[in-house]
Image (tube, rainbow, N blue to C red; front, top):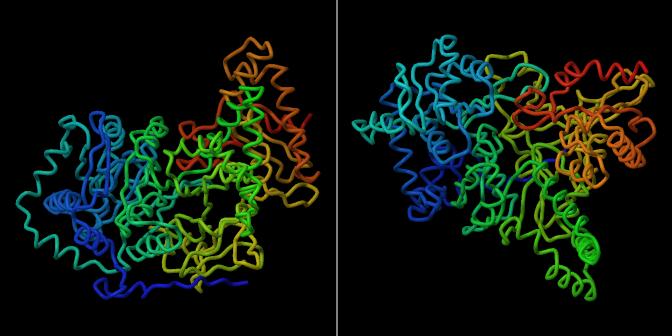
Length: 613
């Protein structure tokens, strides 16, 4: 089955000044928004305890100054420039400046260790790197001897440490003061849609990261397709806290540029709850774990309240769930249920929406599957969560549910202009203008990912229903094949067990083994509360992981959830790990995906013990 979604635009190569025409390159997109909406607020950030507004004309001036400084430092078309920083206004300004002079942006996660930064800087042949602060500067300086192509380092916060080639932000900005505007215009005019705009390095769940070559056409197509698929209005504001090294966040930036929407930058992850209430966004985008943690927190709070409050909460959620199911099925909600839903909202449900600021219209969940029960909970409370799908290799967008057409267990239909089909082995394939050029310096990996007919092999196993909605059932390479020949999807097992409020993470095992086993981490907050209520003296998570009472609790939780699984995929044995899997320990990628090979090797003794007992 091949599904092609209509692309209801004038085409990717239409001239931007034609009626209904789209920009072809990122400089054209930037010029379009900054000239059409010069006085409109495009960005907000917090400084000195207050929110500061930046208009599109102010953004254009800032980007122009950065771009001139890049040219003054000798940057040429095609040169790579890295950004090693958290999500902030300067990241976006530098990205716009880089692509506006025809250079190539290379994002690096600020959580990366120095050797990981060195690999990307060296592999990309980066000429210059922007770093956020002294901590990130020291990472680069510690590996600078391995980077013969790196000439300049620019520090956002601070003046640098006086090392050769290190510039503080103010000193960098003055470098371009004598560069004429004509040079900027000339550089932008030389950029073509298929020129490289970015190298986005994959997270490397199975090996060394690969640099996906993303073009101007790729990014513009995804921005347009997202704008067409999602409900946006000119006055909308979003709060951004996703890492900009991930192409998902970058695509959202360009989508907002296309619609001249306002982007507010969260101060930091710990401040997101406060920032949501201050900014009151109309939409947000996040990874599933954020929604799951909110769900767990709300339910736990209501459960602990007990008595009438707990009963009222459970009644309200059930009423909301009944109404949401009818709405999602496009069926009429009867009058009696509408009345009860209004009462439930007034008494209880609105409080969930208030956590997002009170005027949230929709929220996107991407990068990993969202638990259906969590999604149902938010819909019951009046918060529309939309699942989508995208890969680094197709510029972060292939599928998306719609606000008014949402199937919770799916990632939605293809976005406009996207071709999608299921291969003979069940793999989901995509073909569209946002498929990358290939992997940088790796033609063999490129040929493996994109076939001769231009189809991108996603590595996902999936099914397309009669309405064109795609359901991802597993990862092709992650499939566990048991000794009995059964194909088992580890993600299904892991998601099922993680519905327990006492379980934080799960890694299923069992390839070529007799049965399925699992490595489990504890939810620290909930397990400590349980331990205190049940007379378990320990408070340290590592101690609790060894406690017999905790072991019995998790055994009961696993047994309860095994009822939702087939016998061949149910978890027969498990081990509780003494700490969570983290990015810093190398167990997770920067996008929070499990590095299965790393985890299996690190905890190999525990895995072997489960099968040798």
